[in-house]
Length: 336
Image (cartoon, rainbow, N blue to C red; front, side, top):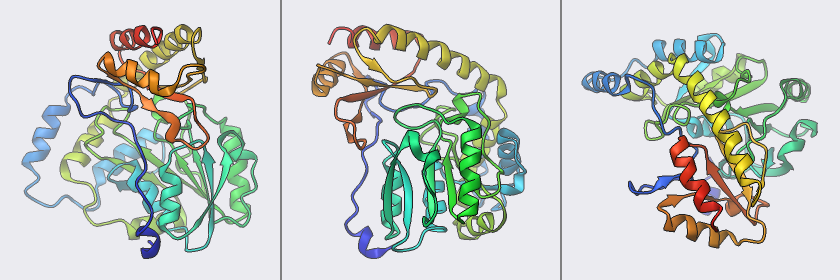
């Protein structure tokens, strides 16, 4: 990390509301958690008087099965963002450049800048057609946040091949891919995949995720990660959650159904961006974003002000929650 840059790089806005009486549509987190989490956490907490096994064999095995890759390719991280930082820090040097999608997750550019490197923004839907040559890394968010659009696997594989030819690392952030039926890029030579468990399994405070890479890139990640970088509760609950395939399927069905229903209902008043993620990006049109935020707040709801994303000036992002909660949000949004 570049000390001079760290002294002046600011924080990035995120969704999330800590007030318990407010239904939070600003963070894209599953409102439900897998069965048995509390018991598993309690057992793990009792074992937390000792350091965890730094090899994390059970966690790696569960992650490998979860994304269909060899467990030895898995590098545990305390959340997806920690994995993104580790991947960038072990690949990008000062004054190098990185292809970063836009509008997309704001932390990509921040992490690149923290290394003293340069960001070259490219439209998120044109990343796979861009030229990766002369860049240390290219970043893809699949599905993209905040638009919810996903890439076709063939396009990603073609782009990965061009990245390999250019000796450019490809970082694929799959934080929301678990909500879809699409296959992971985990285990593909030349790709570094970042996964977050906390969104799909409704446990953002647990901080559990992992990277997947091969060859020398994987060795760098493994060597550079902090010792005991996952606490025993996070590793144990994470491994338990990744084995809950029935819960994952139920979640995918609910999100598909509710997302389609919300989009169809809201498109009469808002421009709704087609999405494969557990959220929708809405163009507020003639309504001001501030007016929408105020009206939603009056209803004890929270949505994400999307103006903090590069290039968006009239948008909000709303998560897909339970049918009953979604009904409340729809009623309020149609009344703005």
